[in-house]
Image (cartoon, rainbow, N blue to C red; front, side, top):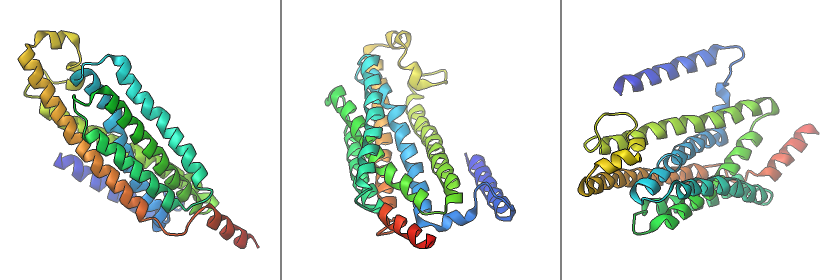
Length: 269
């Protein structure tokens, strides 16, 4: 792990040096002087990591711990998939009247609420709570994401909009990759003592043959370990949601579609 982190830091340093001296850099370092771009990319990364906590592990919880059919596990993902564009649409209408900072901050409140719902998830609350938590998380992501996305595009010149849009989407991919790796490591470490043979332990515990081979006591112990690992993941998810709120609150005050339109009009005169 230390070697991987060291290699990543070295690669990042070399990338910064190369971009700084390139006549036409792929990612101009000057864009990071914009607070909107910096905080927007940070928020995109934290949203990406939080998204993986739901997409990858909530269906496994519904099938493995709650012992519900795959259809309900899929319904939990559908809830998030439907809520995200719904939140984006609502935020798009809000941005016509309020600032990027206020829109994203209001969305982050919903995001934190959804993350807390999933942190409180336990078998006694049932699958309805899991689906509702997924929906609220997706709604909060859509509401929060739109303010950042529109804000970073409006904060730079036209010739840099493609660059900042790409950086925003790439930051989410980075967050998803790191989130999936860290969360997967937490779950695999918790299950390693109960399931031998390595591989994708989360998928293996959902196999009927493996579950039938275990005694009721062993299966209960395995599901307890799995549930405990997921609880730790959703505690981290709350931290990610709070970080996203910090990025939203830190956005420049007073910037909106109207102020940027006015600035562009003045520059054109």
